[in-house]
Length: 167
Figure 1: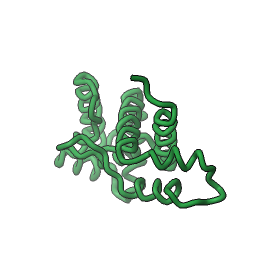
Figure 2 (figure 1 turned 135 degrees about the vertical axis):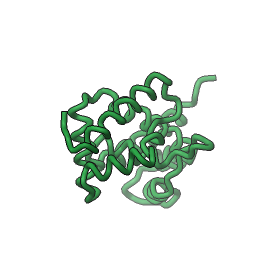
Figure 3 (figure 1 turned 90 degrees about the horizontal axis):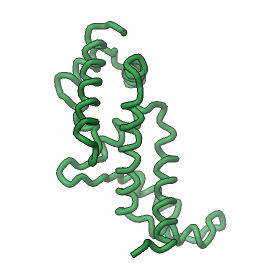
Figure 4 (figure 1 turned 135 degrees about the horizontal axis):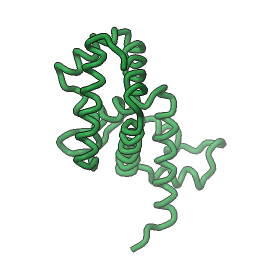
């Protein structure tokens, strides 16, 4: 059975909302860290109470002049399952964007991320290596070869940064 047009519009609207929310993050790595933090490893569902609240405020049932009636209908159907689907899709897309970066770009992204966190790059890399927190950045549905490539590349980049070297 083909999806109804309003269901397709709802999914598309939800995906656009998620992309717009993520666009304020300055790097692929920051998006990847953020999306990885939203994934429940036990259920593989994504939960973001802030996005859910923003979605409800902006496109909820309240009547406003700035939102057309058909948009309210689309957004009122953009519930938790659509938001979960959109976050899952974006996580995979950002993950694949990361895999396309070369080693220099990955190092630069990690250095920038550390700087914005107020942490020296070698300290961040040491922490990530010790905690293996980067392992939660892989999205549900990623192929095993993608996961291995991600882990191998990131472990190499972290090792480079922990030594205070750049490639």
